[in-house]
Image (cartoon, rainbow, N blue to C red; front, side, top):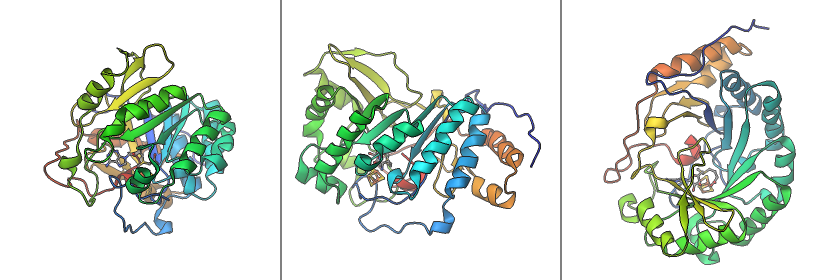
Length: 337
Ligand code: SAM
Ligand code: SF4
């Protein structure tokens, strides 16, 4: 047993405190969404992934350094073997550390099976990706996914009693921009929230990103023709800007890395499937946490020191450019969206 040292909070050179960690627990997925993956993907050998025990060890250290919110993502997190055990171990950190919120991002395909376990384990909120309500288009955009399975997954999530459910929709010109309003209506009818995401140039895909790019401002303008929207002060700890749909319980959010740079207030870091601590989604600055965890097993002080030191290399901001592609060779599934 190592003695527990005192460490400062995670504050970077620009005075931003890191209170939010996104952890990708697998690069594998049962879908191949066109904006996220290639049709043919080579996934990492399993021994390169952090084990579930290592993931819990890393997340506990973060929570003890002042992280208040953890998002488990992937790839598709629910395809990782024994994921329910992971949720319950991380859920327990809410009782022993300053962790306040445990959230998950999922494509919804396995929710009918896992939603109840997740709520029981302490998962507070869930984001479910939904880019189309048309079965054939849904299949085209995900290359594999079945719309009805995901709709049942959303229903299971509602029944299970998460504190909040939010849909995520990536809007692409020529693909699904004609469904902007229908997706919002679906969210309102189901009493849930929805965020529209601008496509990010992460990893090589088969289309030209700048041709499919649809700005949040265009999406917002379309929505304003159909809904009464009021700027909301809600801040979920992420980069979304929110609007309340007047007369409903639903909020509409926008994640706009291109048109509205959110770096100034960045409070987050990511851990990749291989245990690389990424200090910015759009840059390569990173620290290999897996190396530390495997070289000094059980030594939480070594790990925490590396986390505190990493604050010195957190970049000021990202630098996405749709005309050059890709600037970052990692797919979103490795980084954790
Ligand atoms: N598989 C889960 C899912 O789809 O929700 C979790 C991982 S996925 C990488 C997380 C989010 O990232 C999803 O909402 C997805 O739509 C989004 N995403 C993936 N690739 C993206 C890209 N290149 N640009 C913008 N969003 C992307
Ligand atoms: Fe899988 Fe999510 Fe990427 Fe789609 S966005 S391929 S569901 S990881």
